[in-house]
Image 1 (cartoon, rainbow, N blue to C red):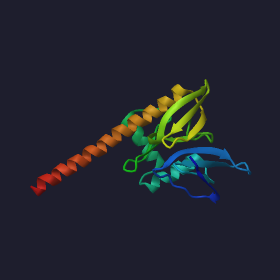
Image 2: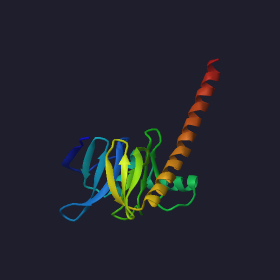
Image 3: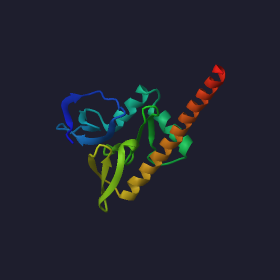
Image 4: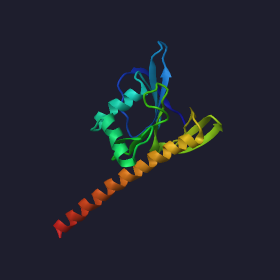
Amino acid sequence: MKYKIVHDKVEEYFIKSDTMAIYPFINQWGAVCAEVYEKDAIILVEKKPFRIIKDTCPYYGSTYDGKKEAARINMGRMCFAPIMIDTKLDIFFFPTQSPRKDSCIWLSQPHIEDIESIDHKNVRVIFSNGMDLPIESTRAALRGKLHRAAHYRSVLMYRTAEKERERLRSRDLILT
């Protein structure tokens, strides 16, 4: 599969439903920036990955801290909590390590097909479009984070679907 690489300086980027991963890199001036992997493009953004996450949350209606607190309330206290950016667009991300570390990679749970071991300290994340991304982590550690994010997504998607079913039932009662 071919990817379109955008080499222009992109200073503003908001996560969307086809965003698969946000990967840090150091630019030629020594600043931490991000490679954003979408289904059919790789976009270079002049922001840290965590800043992209934090800036995207209000774009969809809440703050990062609010979304982090919601994850804690719904899932209990956990390290490296998954973040629900938007349920309707199915955007759920999780960090590979502490979000405040410049080396943290953010992955989109709905886009991950598999995680394969490369060696005992490295894995390859396989995405729904066939792209793979090597990451320094053990398979067990990354799968645990992926499963927590999937569980959180499942809980929220079920609630959203249940509310929609209730709304349709009450509408049907009014119409009859």
